[in-house]
Each structure stands twice: as C-alpha cells, then as structure tokens.
Image 1 (cartoon, one colour):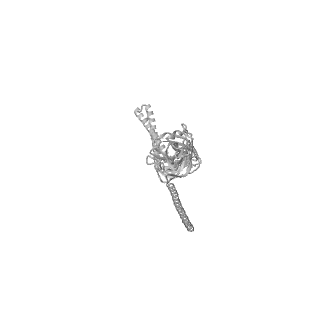
Image 2 (cartoon, helix red, strand yellow):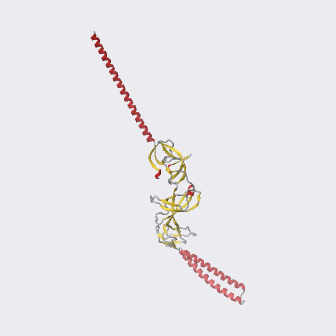
Length: 400
C-alpha cells in the first residue's frame, strides 16, 4: 500500500514538473515574441525618423550665406564710370567738293597740323577766278574815277565847272573804292575756302573714325548736310565721368584720390584724381556728374571703356555709427521696406533693415542685423520667415 502511494506521488510530481516546464517555455516564447515585436516597432520608428529627417533635408531650401562683418569699407565708394579722351572731336569739311585723296586711316597717330585729306573744289576755283577778274575791273574803274575826280577838282579852282559836278565826281570815286574793297573781301573769302581744300589735324592724337573715301561728295553745311570726315581723339590723358548719387555728393571733394579697376586688368589699380564736377544735381537721375582725370601715357585705358571708380577715404561730415557691409544681392524688397534673410536654427528669418550708404555692389546696414549673423545671399523672392533652409556654403564677410 505504501509503495502504491509512493508511486502515485512520484507520478504527480512528474506531471507537476512537466506542467511547470511547459509554462516556462510558453512564457519564454511569449517574451521572445514580444521582444521581436518591440524590436520591429523600434526599427520601423527609427526608419520613420530617418525618412522624416531625409525628407525635411531634401525639402529645405539650399542657401549660400555670408557672415555679416563690420563695415571696413564705409570710407570707400565704388561707382561705375565711362572713359573719354581728354580731347575728342569730329573733323568736318569747310568747303564743298569731292574728296581727292586721304592720307590717314583708323588707328593712325597724327601730329598737330598734319595733312589728313585733300578736297577737289571746282566750283570754288571758278568763283575765285571770276572774283579776281571782277576785282581787276573794279580797280580799273577806281583808277578812272580817281583821274576824273582829280581833274574836276582842278577845274573847280578855275571856276570852270560847278561844285555839283565836282561833288558828283568825288562821290563816284568813293563808290569805286568801296567796290574794290568789297571785291577784295570776296576774293579773300574764296581764297580761304580754297585753302580748306586741305584738311589738317587740329591737335595730336589718334584717328578713331574715317567716314569718306576718294570721290565722295563733301558738303560744308549751308548748301548741304555736313558729313564727318574723321574723328580724332587725344588719349594721353583720359577723362572718367562718374554719376555720384545725391546721398554721397557731400562726400566727394576735388583733388580726392581715386583708383580705377577694369575687368580686362584684374587685380590692377589705375590712379586718378577728381578735377571737377557739375555743381548741379541731374533732376532725371538725381546724380552729380564728376570728372576724374587719369594720366594715360601708357595707353592702357581706351576711350569708351567701362570702369569702376573707387573713391578712397571720402570726406564724412559726421562720425557714423557702427555698421555692417553686405552684398547688394542679399537685399529683399517687401511692402514694409527693405529686408535681409538670416539663418537661425535651420530656419530663415526676415529682418527689416536700415540702409546707410549704397556703394553699388555693397550696402551699408546701420540697423537690423548683428555681426556674424548668417546673411542669405541671392534669396528667393518666395523666402519667408520660417522657411526651412540648408546652408550650402559660408563666406566670411571680413575677407570681402
């Protein structure tokens, strides 16, 4: 009996152990399943965050920024200018005729008084011949009038003629003399016109234009439309005309040193000096016309070139407050006024600004942004505050 009960207890113990093992196995399976589910959820969440981040990055507007720097060029104004030869003139004919020959072409360097062309003037030549013949006739008549007047005055002393007849003879003499003087003046006029058959250079320079060729009809003006024969420029000195905005007029003073830069000579500075200005604001452009003279003995500058004139250390009427320089291409125009876009925490922020001086390619900002802020260059017109942006490149404004 005891042995039977012992076997029964053993069987129950075995059944209890098996049930316990099964429960443990089931719990382990459940835990493994829960761990797998959790791992999958975490993996999907990480993938979702990565996708969201990539989507946001791809959706962010790429921008180039400049670190705003203190205004190191507030004392320099850069403005475009046009060059012109110091002496520049068209050369016209002073007589009518046909071009007989020309001696210079474009690019020829000529001296003052050098013969440029000859004009054939058959009409003037014939008029001169006729005028000379008329002058001879007038002189003969004047000589006859002189003899007659002398004779009548002699006869008047003997009371052989009347005073009236003598006065008439003297009057004819005076008229004949006046006719001779008139004829002489006409001969001199035609001789001068004939002398204009030869066209001379009024000053030393370079021929920049030749508009006629042999056989071309040449008119001097009153009897036809005048035609420019040549164009002469003396470029040993160059005038540079710069339109200075009204806001900077008081900063530009005579004898101020200026240097010029040209695209064809990168990195080179050409010195010049302000010599004069118009002393009046152009009402159409609200600018002052300023002339800068440049020594061009090396012929580096050519008349008609486009240059940038840099006015160094212009006079300031009063000390200016601390300001920043930014490129003009960073400015946005809004209905509220000018604004600048800056980057903060990956977002664009529009800042209203106050402009001091407009230096052309750069602007002086006296209020609205702080040093070292990231100013967006070439901002899109659609840029608004809160727009996600991605900085592509950063420039240091202190190196500008």
